[in-house]
Length: 467
Image (cartoon, rainbow, N blue to C red; front, side, top):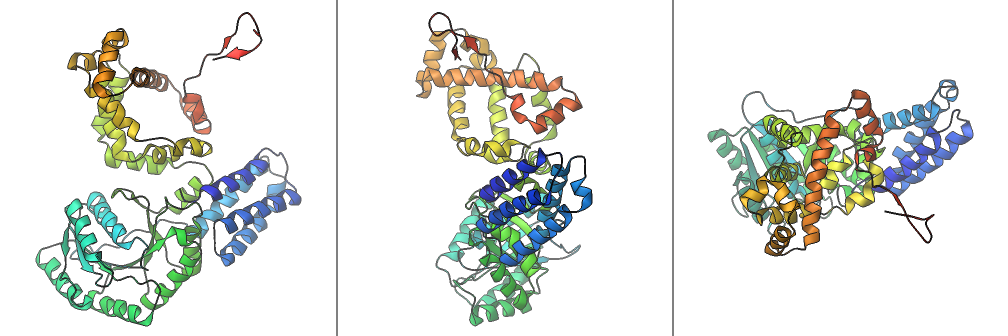
């Protein structure tokens, strides 16, 4: 995941300060060296690094910080604010027309993930804004670009206007006429990318811009290109006056320097972040939330929004009530798996929770296919067994039959039985919690995990412990 290395190093530098009652300039200098190395490793633009370091140091060496009650936490706040400022302070969305057709033109270099990002953005706009979306296939140079967009459109049930290998200017002009006649709300134009910026490419984009008169010109930027992305963004912006950027492939790189360089160098806001191949792995870019993730503070707002978008409130309330009762069964667990899968991967969801950043190595090993395996086990049960979990728990013969029928081991079924039991205990534990308890969990999420009992050995070597 992007920012992993940056996040680890910054958090380490911050932890060295938070435990100190008083900070000296030497402490600040040592931290700044770590921060500088972190940003260099993340391939952040050198000009951005210099400004970042100077701003943080200037605020951190003030008398107010040095004599503060908790100076370490105040320095963390300064770094957080500066990270937020570098990425743009406020979230900036799409400027939709109140009436009529909103036209979005996408530009970018070849390989930046532009066509995939268009599909994701179309699905995102339709879902969040409830608008009727259409694509125009005007990338006539890259082999199979039109076919790729049509495949994505078919997958999402979004109409793609194309005229094969006709001139891009003609395709766009006719496509916009078609969109207006058929009362579409939003049109997203896929333009040609190149391996590098050249005059012919830019002239074609300028011509398309003149014809389309777009409300938004969004540049797709590959996160893996690091600080080069800032230079590309600046070049596009100077010639096309781009209105925003989409940072793609945020899941495929540990550096993330692109996101920390674009705004400062090109002055265009990052509007969206895209990660993964799934069409729902697309979100509005919030600088404050991204800064919070980088510093390991979690991102509960995005988690809540993700849950709200994918899970019906009545459905969630009904599930919680069932979990806190003694009637929670395998049918309910199956429904819960489906609800969680609608929100995305487990590692992504857990990454939003404050304090879970320190467990990123374990989270990256979480296999989402485990849900599928457990679902197969549940489907191998009779309806009576699904409704009454005690039947399975108390009968070894049933457990052997179910595991054999699913093609798995009895040990796999035992883990499923434990998962059901833990869900019940967790729900009851959370139902009796106060606001103070919830704050403690934010600081230490591991406190929610079931604690293993330690048994003292007997006989020889009885001083040793075993679990």
